Length: 420
Image 1 (cartoon, helix red, strand yellow):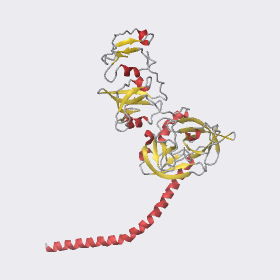
Image 2 (image 1 turned 90 degrees about the vertical axis):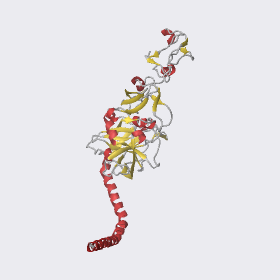
Image 3 (image 1 turned 120 degrees about the vertical axis):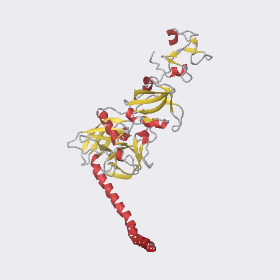
């Protein structure tokens, strides 16, 4: 037994000694690797950037505009070249609306081989600050290769490409993908250098595949036209290419894309802690036509049952609404007095101009709000013409009874004045 213990002790001592000598032997080797690794990694990094840019840049073109509203010595001026990204071999090109605020008289696309082509502005996406161009081509163009959003990871490299200086060779700035679902779930965020020099160009991954189209959209944008310059701020945004391609067939027909509007307002101003409880419904709006009412609490929202999002606060509702365009379907699940109900509507570009409904009665302030009594009927008013009389009790409007939250006044305010 003593012999066995002695052997075990000797073996453990031998293992410990061997481990110590292994560590001592590895120290100079590790030190050498650490000393060399920054240079090696930097070289590999540079090669990866070059390869990705080389793969993508033939799908990037220069866009020139001429004849904007700006005059210099009575001559219409050009605002300088910008960048576009090829979507198809037959000449469909996406770019930013940044170049088209002044309604240019002519548009020219300069291809990577420096061939110049006249372009037509076909449609705009006002929600994402994008414009679709079309050119006639003599030979097929190289369309951008989409990067799959399911493969993206926060912190991965991203490269922004522009063609404002040379149509043959793109300029490149590097950064990381820092966030997804920005600008109310319409954009991805990167800290690459994004400016008017590469608006309309692609944001690519290290395989040279296009993640998104660079745009001047900013965090404050809620509705169309609210463009501010955020370059030099340290962050920039790109619209996922998958979203652009999803809307491409509509834009190819000449249809402009606009943000979708539903026509509700909600209670309170705390976007992060308050639930979405409807405080008003615009008469004639999609919400009104669907049957939504004051007091309804929105629990879920989305374009269809498979894409419903849980809504706990105002911010989440804005994220659910952000990607939806006019003409899109909206499904809402609401809590109405403890019962779950579903409402479907189609979003619109513009809401009807509000006009307060006029009935022409004065209600007795001392009567039960659930059954208001008419105190006075204004002559020649709709109420007078309908034959309403003082002393009568109003039990409902449009078949809907009153309660503490839905009294006569709130029912009237949210009625469509166009409907008898």
